[in-house]
Amino acid sequence: MSEATTNPMLDLLATRRSVKPDRLAAPGPTPDELHQILTIAARVPDHKKLAPWRFIVFEGDARFKAGEIFAEACRREDKEPPSDKRIETERNRLARAPLVVAVVSRTVDNPFAPEWEQVLSCGAACYNMCLAANAMGFGTNWLTDWVSYSAHVREGLGLAANERLAGFVYIGTAMERSPERERPAISDIVSHWPA
Image (cartoon, rainbow, N blue to C red; front, side, top):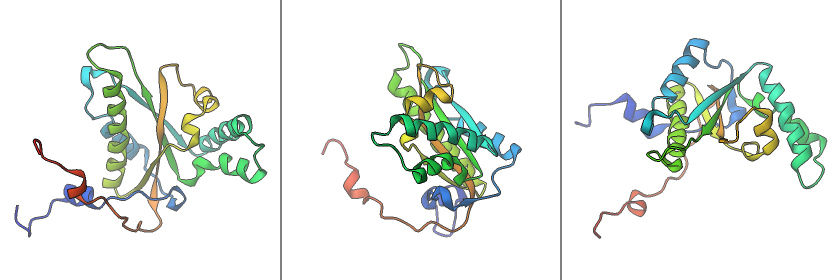
Protein backbone atom coordinates (compact mmCIF):
# COMPACT_ATOMS: atom_id res chain seq x y z
CA MET A 1 0.00 0.00 0.00
CA SER A 2 1.40 3.39 -0.93
CA GLU A 3 1.75 6.19 1.60
CA ALA A 4 -0.84 8.20 -0.33
CA THR A 5 -3.46 5.50 0.20
CA THR A 6 -5.46 5.75 3.39
CA ASN A 7 -7.63 3.16 5.03
CA PRO A 8 -10.33 4.53 7.36
CA MET A 9 -10.46 1.32 9.38
CA LEU A 10 -6.71 1.34 10.02
CA ASP A 11 -6.88 5.05 10.85
CA LEU A 12 -9.58 4.34 13.45
CA LEU A 13 -7.65 1.45 14.97
CA ALA A 14 -4.41 3.46 15.07
CA THR A 15 -5.93 6.51 16.74
CA ARG A 16 -8.85 5.36 18.90
CA ARG A 17 -8.81 6.45 22.54
CA SER A 18 -11.05 5.87 25.50
CA VAL A 19 -12.94 8.92 26.72
CA LYS A 20 -13.51 9.43 30.45
CA PRO A 21 -17.18 8.71 31.22
CA ASP A 22 -17.81 12.20 32.62
CA ARG A 23 -16.60 13.64 29.31
CA LEU A 24 -19.32 11.78 27.36
CA ALA A 25 -22.41 13.89 26.71
CA ALA A 26 -25.66 13.53 24.84
CA PRO A 27 -26.55 12.57 22.28
CA GLY A 28 -25.89 8.90 22.63
CA PRO A 29 -26.76 6.34 19.98
CA THR A 30 -30.28 6.22 18.57
CA PRO A 31 -32.16 2.91 18.93
CA ASP A 32 -31.15 1.96 15.38
CA GLU A 33 -27.51 2.88 16.01
CA LEU A 34 -27.51 0.93 19.28
CA HIS A 35 -28.96 -2.11 17.51
CA GLN A 36 -26.14 -1.90 14.95
CA ILE A 37 -23.50 -1.44 17.68
CA LEU A 38 -24.74 -4.49 19.60
CA THR A 39 -25.03 -6.57 16.43
CA ILE A 40 -21.40 -5.77 15.63
CA ALA A 41 -20.39 -6.44 19.25
CA ALA A 42 -21.79 -9.96 18.93
CA ARG A 43 -19.87 -10.60 15.70
CA VAL A 44 -16.71 -11.94 17.32
CA PRO A 45 -14.92 -15.31 17.38
CA ASP A 46 -17.22 -17.69 19.23
CA HIS A 47 -15.97 -21.28 19.22
CA LYS A 48 -18.90 -23.73 19.12
CA LYS A 49 -21.41 -20.85 18.74
CA LEU A 50 -22.07 -20.58 22.48
CA ALA A 51 -22.69 -16.80 22.61
CA PRO A 52 -20.82 -16.61 25.93
CA TRP A 53 -21.94 -13.01 26.52
CA ARG A 54 -25.06 -10.92 26.76
CA PHE A 55 -25.77 -7.20 27.06
CA ILE A 56 -27.79 -5.12 29.55
CA VAL A 57 -28.58 -1.59 28.32
CA PHE A 58 -28.97 1.32 30.74
CA GLU A 59 -30.33 4.65 29.57
CA GLY A 60 -32.60 7.33 31.00
CA ASP A 61 -33.91 6.57 34.48
CA ALA A 62 -32.59 3.01 34.34
CA ARG A 63 -29.11 4.43 34.98
CA PHE A 64 -30.30 5.82 38.32
CA LYS A 65 -32.22 2.66 39.28
CA ALA A 66 -28.98 0.70 38.79
CA GLY A 67 -27.24 3.42 40.81
CA GLU A 68 -29.46 2.59 43.79
CA ILE A 69 -28.21 -1.01 43.58
CA PHE A 70 -24.62 0.29 43.48
CA ALA A 71 -25.21 2.58 46.47
CA GLU A 72 -26.69 -0.28 48.50
CA ALA A 73 -23.78 -2.55 47.54
CA CYS A 74 -21.41 0.16 48.72
CA ARG A 75 -23.20 0.37 52.08
CA ARG A 76 -23.11 -3.42 52.50
CA GLU A 77 -19.66 -4.23 51.18
CA ASP A 78 -17.34 -1.35 52.13
CA LYS A 79 -15.12 -2.04 55.13
CA GLU A 80 -15.83 1.43 56.54
CA PRO A 81 -19.23 3.17 56.46
CA PRO A 82 -19.23 5.18 53.21
CA SER A 83 -19.67 8.94 53.25
CA ASP A 84 -22.75 10.62 51.82
CA LYS A 85 -20.57 11.89 48.96
CA ARG A 86 -19.45 8.34 48.13
CA ILE A 87 -23.05 7.09 48.14
CA GLU A 88 -24.04 9.91 45.79
CA THR A 89 -21.13 9.01 43.48
CA GLU A 90 -22.37 5.42 43.30
CA ARG A 91 -25.97 6.53 42.65
CA ASN A 92 -24.74 8.57 39.69
CA ARG A 93 -22.08 6.16 38.42
CA LEU A 94 -23.93 5.24 35.21
CA ALA A 95 -25.32 8.76 34.71
CA ARG A 96 -21.91 9.96 33.58
CA ALA A 97 -22.79 8.98 29.99
CA PRO A 98 -26.10 9.01 28.11
CA LEU A 99 -25.97 5.25 27.52
CA VAL A 100 -24.16 2.41 29.27
CA VAL A 101 -24.06 -1.26 28.32
CA ALA A 102 -23.13 -3.90 30.88
CA VAL A 103 -21.42 -6.83 29.21
CA VAL A 104 -22.12 -10.11 30.95
CA SER A 105 -19.72 -13.00 30.51
CA ARG A 106 -21.63 -16.29 30.64
CA THR A 107 -19.67 -19.51 30.48
CA VAL A 108 -21.15 -22.90 29.77
CA ASP A 109 -19.67 -26.37 30.16
CA ASN A 110 -18.44 -27.52 26.78
CA PRO A 111 -15.45 -29.86 26.40
CA PHE A 112 -14.64 -28.35 22.99
CA ALA A 113 -14.72 -24.70 24.11
CA PRO A 114 -12.77 -24.17 27.33
CA GLU A 115 -13.91 -21.45 29.74
CA TRP A 116 -10.86 -19.33 28.86
CA GLU A 117 -11.92 -19.21 25.19
CA GLN A 118 -15.41 -18.12 26.21
CA VAL A 119 -14.04 -15.34 28.42
CA LEU A 120 -11.78 -14.15 25.62
CA SER A 121 -14.78 -14.07 23.27
CA CYS A 122 -16.62 -11.86 25.76
CA GLY A 123 -13.64 -9.49 25.91
CA ALA A 124 -13.67 -9.32 22.11
CA ALA A 125 -17.38 -8.42 22.25
CA CYS A 126 -16.60 -5.53 24.61
CA TYR A 127 -13.93 -4.19 22.29
CA ASN A 128 -16.02 -4.69 19.15
CA MET A 129 -18.77 -2.67 20.85
CA CYS A 130 -16.32 0.16 21.48
CA LEU A 131 -14.99 0.05 17.91
CA ALA A 132 -18.49 0.04 16.39
CA ALA A 133 -19.52 3.05 18.47
CA ASN A 134 -16.22 4.81 17.69
CA ALA A 135 -16.74 4.20 13.96
CA MET A 136 -20.11 5.96 14.30
CA GLY A 137 -18.41 8.97 15.87
CA PHE A 138 -19.20 8.24 19.52
CA GLY A 139 -16.73 8.18 22.38
CA THR A 140 -16.54 5.09 24.59
CA ASN A 141 -14.98 3.80 27.76
CA TRP A 142 -14.96 0.15 28.89
CA LEU A 143 -14.62 0.01 32.68
CA THR A 144 -15.02 -2.68 35.27
CA ASP A 145 -14.84 -0.63 38.48
CA TRP A 146 -15.52 -2.30 41.80
CA VAL A 147 -19.21 -2.79 40.95
CA SER A 148 -18.30 -5.50 38.42
CA TYR A 149 -16.99 -7.64 41.29
CA SER A 150 -19.79 -6.97 43.78
CA ALA A 151 -22.00 -9.92 44.74
CA HIS A 152 -24.87 -7.52 45.54
CA VAL A 153 -24.60 -5.85 42.12
CA ARG A 154 -24.50 -9.21 40.31
CA GLU A 155 -27.63 -10.27 42.20
CA GLY A 156 -29.35 -6.92 41.68
CA LEU A 157 -28.75 -7.08 37.91
CA GLY A 158 -30.07 -10.64 37.74
CA LEU A 159 -26.88 -12.48 36.85
CA ALA A 160 -26.94 -16.27 36.99
CA ALA A 161 -24.38 -18.38 38.83
CA ASN A 162 -22.39 -18.92 35.61
CA GLU A 163 -22.28 -15.20 34.79
CA ARG A 164 -19.87 -12.38 35.66
CA LEU A 165 -19.67 -8.75 34.66
CA ALA A 166 -16.96 -8.13 32.08
CA GLY A 167 -17.57 -4.45 32.63
CA PHE A 168 -19.61 -1.46 31.57
CA VAL A 169 -19.21 0.25 28.20
CA TYR A 170 -20.05 3.96 28.46
CA ILE A 171 -21.15 5.49 25.13
CA GLY A 172 -21.82 9.13 24.23
CA THR A 173 -20.59 12.14 22.34
CA ALA A 174 -17.06 13.08 23.38
CA MET A 175 -16.91 16.60 24.79
CA GLU A 176 -13.23 16.82 23.90
CA ARG A 177 -10.57 14.76 22.20
CA SER A 178 -8.65 12.55 24.62
CA PRO A 179 -4.91 13.22 24.68
CA GLU A 180 -2.63 10.52 23.37
CA ARG A 181 -0.91 8.42 25.99
CA GLU A 182 2.35 6.54 25.99
CA ARG A 183 2.18 3.12 24.34
CA PRO A 184 4.63 0.23 24.66
CA ALA A 185 7.44 0.10 22.13
CA ILE A 186 6.72 -2.75 19.71
CA SER A 187 10.34 -3.90 20.07
CA ASP A 188 9.67 -4.45 23.80
CA ILE A 189 6.64 -6.68 23.32
CA VAL A 190 7.38 -8.65 20.15
CA SER A 191 9.75 -11.59 19.74
CA HIS A 192 10.29 -13.98 16.87
CA TRP A 193 10.54 -17.67 17.58
CA PRO A 194 12.98 -19.26 17.69
CA ALA A 195 15.02 -16.46 19.15
